[in-house]
Structures are given as structure tokens and as C-alpha cells.
Length: 79
Image: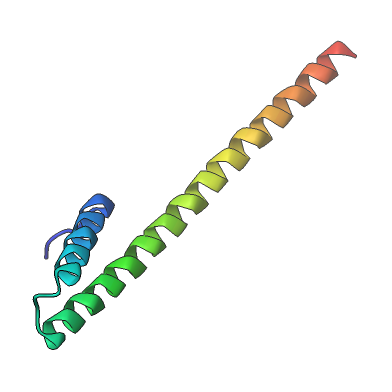
């Protein structure tokens, strides 16, 4: 079983599909197949972006918490 495509590869595939659909040279059935593929890829990308956003949020919260703890230590040392 192969690895799943990277986010950037998915975006490139979406761009390819959009170009093909915009050309309008395919049958209705083929256009629908490509559209369905694009929707699935879009959902996958959206899920990856949500996961990345969550990771960033957690990291920034950790950094803010560490900064607050360090600020508290500085105040304690000055007393």
C-alpha cells in the first residue's frame, strides 16, 4: 500500500482537474467523475488544513503559557 499524496500534490491535482473542467471538452460523465474526485480531494485538503490549524493553535498556546510562566518567575524573583 502506497503513502497518501502530500497536501501540495493534492492541490496540484485539483488545479489539473479545474483546468480540464474549464476546457469543457469532456463528456458529461467524465466531467462528473472529475468533479467528484475534486470534491473528495477538497475535503481531504480541508481536513489537513484543520489539523494543521489545531497543531499551530496548540503550539502557540504552549509558547504563550511558557512565556506567562517565565514572566511569573521574573516577578517572583524581583519581590
